[in-house]
Structures are given as C-alpha cells and as structure tokens.
Length: 380
Image 1 (cartoon, rainbow, N blue to C red):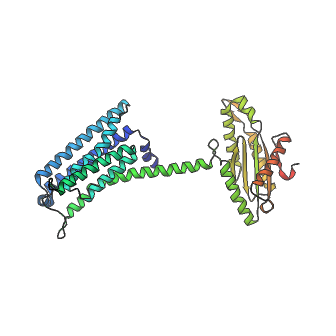
Image 2: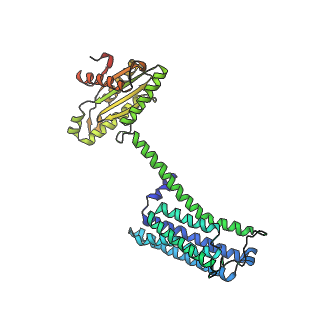
Image 3: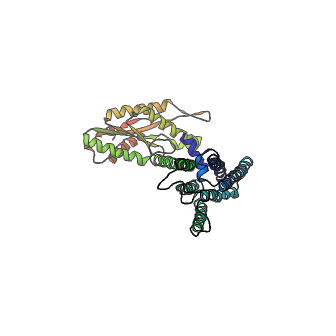
C-alpha cells in the first residue's frame, strides 16, 4: 500500500497537475452542495443565509467545478498524447489557491477554514511541484486575501456577504454551521495529510535505502568493508568482556582476473554474487559475511574456536567447488583460498589483528597451491 501511494511523487509534473485538477472538482461541488442543502433543507439557511448571495456562491462553485473539470480534461488529453505542458502545470499551481478565495470571501475571511484551506493548498503544492512557483502562487493568494480583508475593514466590501447575521455569538452558536464548516474543511485537510504522508513515507524509505547502501556491497548484497569492520570491532569488544574466542576467515577467489579476461566482467560479477550466496548459506545466523574489496571476502565467527572456524571454511571451499557458475550456457569453475584465525579475544591486541593474521594464513594457502584452507597457527 505504501509503495503504491508514494509512487505518486515519482509522477511527472503534468500528471501531478492533472490529478490535482481532478481532485479539485469535487471540492467545489462539495461547497455547492452545502449551499444548496443549507438554503433548501435547513432552518440555518432560512435564518442566516442571504438567498441572493448564496445563489451567487452556488453559481460560482459550479462554474469553478466546471473550470477544473476542463483543466482535468486538458490534462487527460495531454496524458493520452504523451505530451508535457508547463502551461498546464502553471495553470494548476496559480489557480488552485485563487479559486478558493471567492468562497472564503463569501463566508468570511476570518473563518478558521479559510486559513486551513490556504495552508493545505500550499502544503500540497510544495510537495508536488517546484518550490519557487508554489511560493509565488502562495504569495499571490495571500496578497489577494489581504486586499479583500483591507477592503472589508475599510467598508468597501461587506464581511461574509452570504450571511444575514453571524451564526456564532456569545449567546448563540449554530450547531449546523459549526459542523458543516468543519466538514467543508475535511477534504482539504485530508488531501494535505495524504500528500504529507506520501512525502514522509518517501523520506523514510530513502533514508532506509541510504542506510542500507552505506553498509551493503551493492553487487553482492553482503556487508561492505566498512560495515564488516564495524561489526568486527563490536564483536571483539564483546568477546573481550565475555573472555571468549572469535574467529575470522579470509577468502580470495582463485584466478579471478583470468575469469574476467576469459569470460568477461559480467561473468566475474556473477561469480562474486555466487560466492556471496554460497558463503551466506554455509555460515550461522550470528556470523557475518563481508566483501572487503575485489574478489576478497571475510567471515566473522563470534565465539568460534580455530577448529570450528576451519570446519566452516572447509565447507565454504567445498561448496564453491561443487557449484560452478553458469554464464551464457557455459560453466565457470570457482575455487577459493581461505585463511583462518581463531583465538581467544584477550590474547589479541586489537580487532584488526584478526584480519591481519587471517590474511597471513590466506597468503600461505595461495603459496601452497590455492583451493585450500590454512589456519594461522599452521602457517609458516
């Protein structure tokens, strides 16, 4: 559900403008329906509404709905023809707030819903469109609102001309007016809330992606060098506290350059991904696999002794040998040399020393003919 909703933010400006136009049509129809119901079916309409001005407001709301329906049809045509139009986008941006102001003027510009609608329009625009155009449209709407307010204060224009008298006073509060005004604001608030939800969801998803990319090798999906070293430091500190052992296995794919030269870099990438998958399938859930760079991998085995780490390393070596990589219909053999270091943590000066000792054993494995496992204690 979240993916489908937040995908709206990836739409083109044309499609966002079209959607906003489509949604604005029922907003104006909602206001027109409120006027019509209030005039014809409520005591509130008979007591508080000026029939002539209310009729004018009803006519304006219907005309505004027609205007937005035409804009939506324009957007639909552009989408069908797969054509972009900044004129459509600018029309929607600069019309959205302005089209609400006559209705705000009729019911009273000091009403809370006027501010809610203006704020909701701005939030919607800032999320969907470029900042500066929306900011310009916001200030235009704000200027018009202030001008209408000034003219009202100076007595040039009446305040809330649709009202015969104020439906809210110290002595009387019209329940219908309060409830209906709240309901009129619900669509605007809901739409602004949904847009903000989309934006926040996108931010959270991108933050999670950024965090994942920061600790993951993009090709193989295992931990990258920095993440692996961070885990190594944490496990080393924990093993020091618990006075337990830990082990590190260094793995280097044999003759990997020949694989790239003979089969191409795509085959090399397939071999790297295959190796990461094999290692992940052999180790325990508490163990960590990382790619240190190139064709070099490392495995961290918390609590493991040298003997246990040798068993894991041998299973990894055997699994790689048993499963050649198929690339473009041809098998690509995979072997690896592995070096193991397993020691009590309190006998090693620092966490990185495990890697250094495992690396020494790895070189011994290479010098001994490759495709083998050598433990640090057994290396020359």
